[in-house]
Length: 505
Image (cartoon, rainbow, N blue to C red; front, side, top):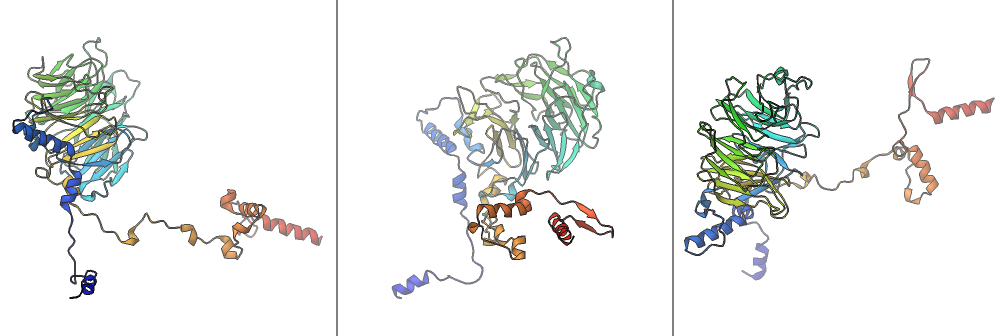
């Protein structure tokens, strides 16, 4: 076979019929690999080989391979701090809220690496940041806690379903109001009852609502400070126990308390003052799976582990975790072995980090820098049990989805493994199309169309005065003639008719 035939064969198809298109999964996963994780593994290998490690921060690198942190995708849509985040129980959809007032809804099944965008953007309350978002247990509803005094309920598709009542701000006794009278701070669905949720507010109350009743709450917990002569104190965060028997709340005077969900609500089952520094914002409260362990995240830079049966002092305490964002939360891993939380940027350390902490002694297993390119804080963190993936938000508006190719299931892996849609040229909605080129103007219909480039300035001004759009002429009034016909005044025609009459006279 001659060389010319070989060159020609390269341009001919190898066969007929449907052609198999291969997708480069390895290349896509390589793009999503976190280089920081690779560096940590190399340090781990050096440590196992008996070499000295340069990092001496107490991190246990032997456990790195159990953590879903080897890869990540970044969802970028918000332009301010992402202050609220939740994933539905099925692990399919993500809801995020921000200081930019928007709630963004994401669907893993509807995204690929070339198109990481939410399928819906909603502004729940105009010009109000969002403090909390939570999917219901069945994943059909989203509880929205804005910075107003009224909670809202949305469907999973982002359609507003309910807005709950606002209380009477002129009543002093908060037991007599049918809703909150000050800014909301937190909210949480009941873990076993799909119709109940709780909200907390700066009006010193925790209110338990029936999702089907918008007119008033079901129960009220009025929290009073013991150190200020019974005066009101602000509630910063709340949490249900996994079995739904207790509800805990933290206050800005440093106190923590919990109440029985069946009442009485006039006094807590147990409480402790000075759990955290006074006038610091205790931004996170969460129960452990055993229903007796309580974990708190203080605005004083500490995390503390409590046993609610002995509420006098914490079981463990850890300091040095800077927290300046009031929505910074804290969460357990699905197996309860680890704790995750974020730290805020400081003048000394401009970049906050995501800390993965050992529950047994509160030591840091590893700390991850999500974005080192600019000053940022890590705000919300969630470890989804079904996906085995960690989602974390930053003050720069990004949502980082961390996962492991071997350990994680679906979620971000669906996004990575989905091939980009092959678009036809007719599907390119970004193509430049000159719609004015096909527009038909009145001048063209009347045969008076001219090349304006050849007109004088005076001629252009006359044409502009006759153009309703350029002259901004209002709509002409209607007039009813004696014979009942309705017509539009034509001042030019009327003036011409009057002029002809005068000439005849």
